[in-house]
Length: 134
Image (cartoon, rainbow, N blue to C red; front, side, top):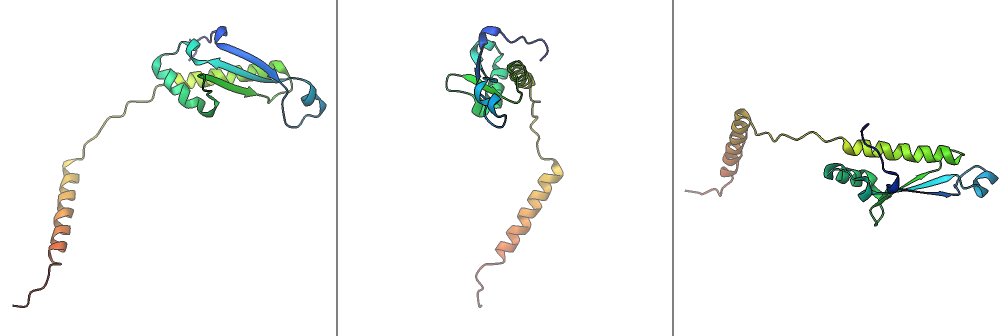
């Protein structure tokens, strides 16, 4: 949602050493970003809050925080930007409401077909009775 501003006090960033390939740079420079977002401080409407929790999945902690790990790039700033963009995308998706489902009823022809099928089945079963020798 373009009008939604993420409050800075809801965010907490921690820089950690990233894993994977990269040699000495990865082992000694803390370029990966862990972005923690406090869901209560975002001030989302109830429907968006519920959907955001659903979208977060395993990234949601027991303290109602979303933990986003960004280590795609070699620089802190690029990873920081990446984490914030991913959060913004997630919040934007949470603001999109699902269309209301309209309950439908079966038509007359469908009801008639169902009754006819029941009658046919009934007559088949009725013919399976015990045979009497009179």
